[in-house]
Amino acid sequence: MAKGDFRLCDVVLDETIGRSTPDVEHERAVAIFDLIEENTFEPVGHPGGPYRLLLSLVDSKLVFSIKTEDDEAVATHILSLTPFRRIIKDYFMICESYYEAIRSSTPSQIEAIDMGRRGIHNEGSQTLMDRLSGKIKLDFDTARRLFTLVCVLYWRG
Image 1 (spheres, rainbow, N blue to C red):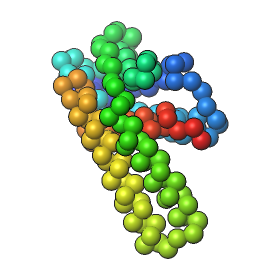
Image 2 (image 1 turned 90 degrees about the horizontal axis):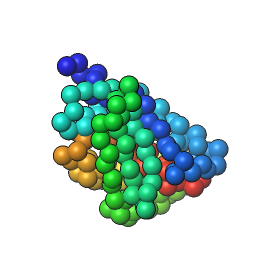
Image 3 (image 1 turned 90 degrees about the vertical axis):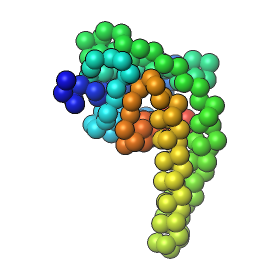
């Protein structure tokens, strides 16, 4: 089976996620574009895709509905977002510091804040990989892109 079979070809946010400001909608579109552009996505036990991913929110849980490109149901996984709350909150706080630093701080201060921002992002990405372990195989870069999308779902602009 070709390596390209284990990838996402489409990501859709359903109506449970709701719409937001134009800035937030733009960030969501960019996050989805980046995720689709380059990813490794392998539902455990499935022979191959490519896959469509429908994301929805039900009772504060993120629902991954996975289908093949031809709309054949593959799996549904429900992910509690509780383990991500602190990480996402910390991530947004450090992003605010980063954007503020860009306006008024030295390059070394900006770099230090950016290293912290990347560290928290990596922590969230690893947590996502851990939570999906045994269900969906992701490489770290795909987990990073998917974590970015999860963050943008919470961003209010």
